[in-house]
Image 1 (tube, helix red, strand yellow):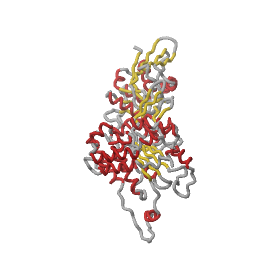
Image 2: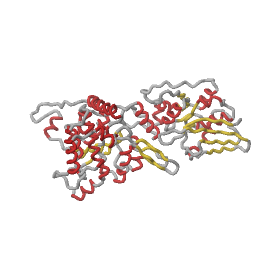
Image 3: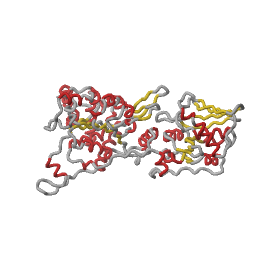
Length: 523
């Protein structure tokens, strides 16, 4: 029978649906037909496959070849199907046995010489292969990424001949020994984009700004969005870059989910896959770059920051249209990108940290400021009320006093040396991890993800607290969303202090971060 079926995986968002490569050889003039909704790169695989088969010293069938990529309604893109197509043709022409093919899935691109090249979106495919309890035959350069999946036999190969010898039981491929902490080889690094460098540094390196540091810790404890505003050079960017260092490490499931997004985006594995991602796009970034898009709907910065931090420096410099696209994913934790052919859903559960100046020149309120009231109003109006309402903590970062600056640098006006003794990142991280653990045990999620109904049970208000919140709603014109965000922040403050019940002072502190309205009100 001149029919063979080989299994592989397509790419659809962060999912990898199963694809059956069906090859039938029939009599007639030699031809090569491919059906099943293939895009251009998939159609071009027939030339790569033909050359690879010939250069691997196999016979390319001089018959009518029909290749069906099932299911037919699923769009197929990329060069990831090359190995599966080649193996199916060789099996249909009886040059390799058909029987073992049921136990494997194949993913990889073929060079004209028959060598195997890496492809993207390997991790979701590996997860799908593991769910079927199959073995994955893949290019050696993709093996390290696939090794993140547990209970998956991975057989890396460098050439089509190695796969043929394995299927013939002449020389078996050696299963990959999983070494998650090993560094990629030079060849792997050359084939993949260089990993995004995560920020580093201790929070105690930031001079002063104890109020801002406290807000940063509360933000980390509950996963709350945070806005720093103040003049240039006061440490806003430095504070934001220290946040990943105090956040708890990702769980194994979260790390695998983040790695899958990076895999689909064509990014290399991050140096530390358990560290929270930190993305800081430039203010010239487009809406598609921020939320994702393109002809094949790749993930954007908000998805690359999933389970981590999205830092937007100079927030008003971003286009207002770009900022407005953040509103929906900030609430839902995901983004749906729709195209004519298909829809792609990407997770986007990120923590927004933003920084801005009080005016275009940055020195509002000092003699150095030359901005007119109209310029200041236009500058601040780039941030809409609905977007600002979704930011839980809004903190003013003030200029450091001269005496404190001299003291921080090791000298004070008297000439003696002084050192500011503060906690290290690991000490702060332990306190934040303990607060998050209390949240998970109590409600199964962190505080920023609590619904309004859950907040009524978790944060009940006594008469004194009701009077406080009633006064705050009327005085500061809090919206319904703003009211519940104050409750979430207060709950995080109580968790940091290891309190089972939210105290009145917790609500007062939460309101002090919420009602910092100078950054949004016109002069």
